[in-house]
Image (cartoon, rainbow, N blue to C red; front, side, top):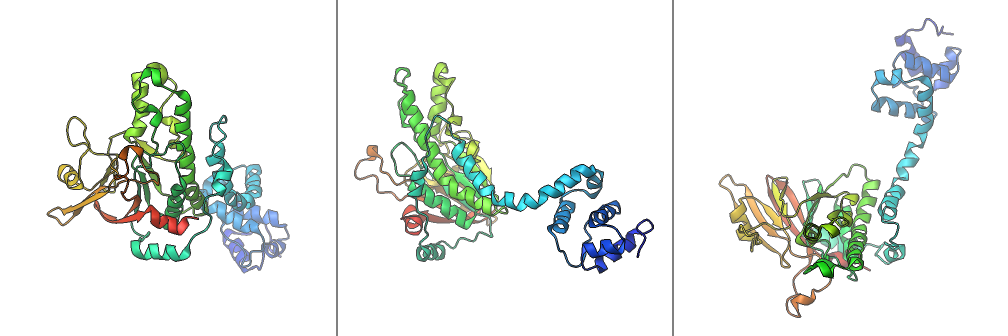
Length: 394
């Protein structure tokens, strides 16, 4: 029998490591297991355990010692440490519950007066994946998620009554390839209620419908992404949103009519609530040496740059913008061999715009994956909505 009062730190380590269980080590000192744990803490060797771990308590203790400075841990009152030991076994269960907490934030954090989003609507969304089409998509796109990757979402122009199922496909695809960054180029919300605004024409009911349709649509997009993040804690993408001229309608009206401006703002769209870093209209954001904005201006009057070539010629760096229905790309290079690309990302929605008539709604609709990003150069991959529909659509 070893005397607990004269045992040294080295002897205690040897005793524990040579024992089959912590209970076996405690019996050699003629003390109970809890007293042995306290003695182990006294010598600052909580990371040492018996060869065979028979309880979760040993693992839990190691978990604490990894995350807390040892000296600070020893200074924590014994009562608090005991409470932590009781709490830690529930940590895994709480992690599993994280997915449900995410859903609660996404759904229940909406204004109480709104009955949206209705869960039955989401039940109609696709819950299956066409594996054959997914393999075909992967073989064509060659996305390598081990490299720096951006996903770019162009103009969605969400308004009441339009089909938003494509956002579910996009969200699931993003969750599948797990990019480093997700960029929305603005005009996600159409805000048709503020088009050609006049003070006497403001309709609060129509404004709320516009806002609610955008919130519902953002819910559809973000749900599969947030669910994937809840399952994979190592995937932590950034979310950047460059406001478009359609969202800017809210700010223009608020600045024009101070009375109305006192109760409306871009924050009504709740982009920040869903984790987006929101950038002001026409303020470029530089991410990995690529400039993003809803559009870049060509003149002092603020007119949008009309072409991808003009975009590169004027800005002298890789730039990506939205605003135009049709996509366009131009590539050039610097003398040092660095590639520069200009990308007009086009449109990302299923509906047709009435004002474009019968002959001008035939443009492609897509998102973009910018892969293998290095010093502003990237491999652009067009992922059309019709491709995503074949994979994730009903």
